[in-house]
Every structure is written in structure tokens, then in C-alpha cells.
Length: 357
Image 1 (spheres, helix red, strand yellow):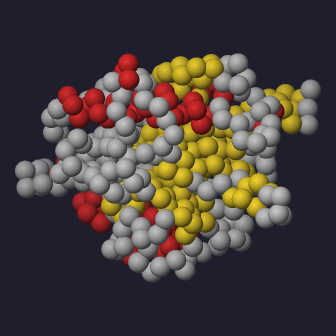
Image 2 (cartoon, one colour):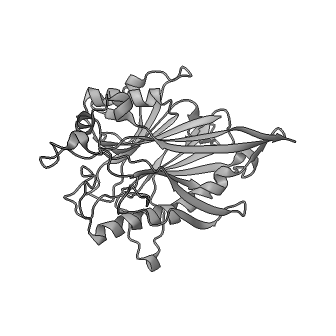
Image 3 (cartoon, helix red, strand yellow):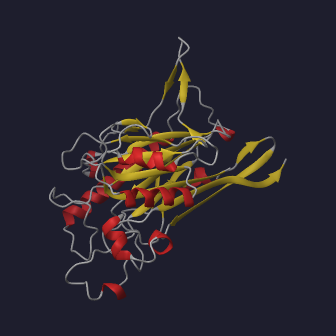
């Protein structure tokens, strides 16, 4: 099966989100055929599961209502939560998913079921030797099981690395050619290291209950979101992701856990200012390469065994150029009305038959 997972910083989307913005997001989800969408910078008046009846002023509820039925004829589902540890980072995260996947659950002794909902993840220890400090905004962690492959599981770490040490500066600024102080750069890199080196391996190797760790019982862990960090390329600038390739230990299968961060395309959009307004039409509108996907390339490249067939895994990550494709190339309109980021897509396909036994 092939699964498409989207990530999108929707820029302070709250109760006052315009119908135009909601419709635009719905159009992206439908046209890109996303199975799961991870959103950042969401403000909601309700934590937990959200449906189309939750509240008219709830942006996620509005999205669910307008999405209608998925391609399987069933309703979309959504979950919202926000970290509680910082008054300076009040926005939260959301997951939206269709019926190709479901949340894990376990049957209790009384016959009822306990559902494992997404949750803000805060169960990590800091490496004092690396001068790590607590994340300002802990990630939202969700587990999703494909309907057609019940022994498989996606574990998604929805991430939004803090933009600035200064509470007066928020993510409305996408580093439009400003000089960052070394403290801000180190703060962002510190947060990346905590999630990649500490949280990722712990969640990737965790076994829940009697989960099968072999064959198609594999769990695939994905860290994604707005990192506020660039990959080090000729077309990008500081701040950079501290380590693009990183080994974070060994998995339960004895293989090294080798993380790599993907998406080289620029995904943030420059603001129109009095200083650049005259030249904006001729400028490079995309500014930073902040939105990424990170995963274990060893685990994702491995083969699984089903009915005597070896099934290879193919993964790809790319930005979705929604300004050109859906907004008539109008960067000014998009930046003002929709977001200062464009979405990215991670596609996971394990349909590739390599050989028969």
C-alpha cells in the first residue's frame, strides 16, 4: 500500500480563521490525497478528538466538516492538543486522518476498549553533558495503524521547534534576512537534538503489549514538522540542522538506527515590507528550508516478508508548491491570507515486490 502523510504549518490558525483559509486547506488535503495530515500552529478551544459538530469556531472542526466523506465513504477524524509547559508557546498541533488508518486500541477485561489517542510527549531525559534544556513546545505523538496491514504501525512525532528565545518574537517572522544571535541558533539546534537523539529512538523502539517486531509487524517512526532550521545547501543559510545524518543507537532488530532529514525545497515565504515592496514581484519569494521529515533510513529501506514475497519500501519527501498550483502564483495573497509556509508530503510505499521465494 501507498500512504501519503502531509505536514503543514498553518500560521496561527484559530477561531478567527477565514473561510477562505479553511477552504484552501481542505483543497490541499483532498487534491494531494493525504491519508494523514500533521498541522502546526493551531489554536483550538477543545483538546482531544474533534468532529464536525465540535464547535463552529473551531478551525479543525470546520476542516472536518468541509472534508465530508473520504474516498472510502467514511468520515475524517481529527485530534488536537497543545503543550502546557510554556505561556510563550500557546499554539498546538493537530492530526487529521482518513479511514485508511485507525488509532490503536486494546480490549479490556470488561469487554470495553481503550483507545490510544495522540498525546503531547514529555517523557524524555535531558543530556546534561550536551547542555540540553527542556523543549519549549513538546511534540504531539500519534500512532496510526493501516486498515489493510494491521501488524504495521506509523508513529508520527509532530514537531514545531521554537522560533526565538524572545517571547516577543513569534513564528510570524520567518527569518527574512535577519541576523540571528548565537543563542537563538543554539536553542533551535538543541531542540532538534532532543527530539532526534532522545525522543525518536525511545518511541521508535518501544514495544506496546504483545506487538510483533518481525515481518510486517514493523513500526515506522517519522519525525516531521516545522524545524525552523535549514539543511546546509548552497541555496540556504544559517541556522542549519546540526546533524543531517545521525546514528542514535541500535534497534530491537540489532541494526543501527540511522536518521536522515529530508526535503531540500524552500518552504517559507518572504513578507512584503515597505523596504521590499517595489522589488517583491521580481524577488525569490521562497526564503527558508524549514519544513522537514526525519526517519530511520535503515528501518525504512528494509524488506518485509508476506506470503513468501519480499516487499521493498520506497519513500519520498517533497514540498507541495501550493502557491503556484492553487493560488495563481500570488505570493502576496497567499502570505497574507493562508500561511507563511507551504506544506510538504512524505509518501511511504511498500508495494514494491522484489522477488518471490
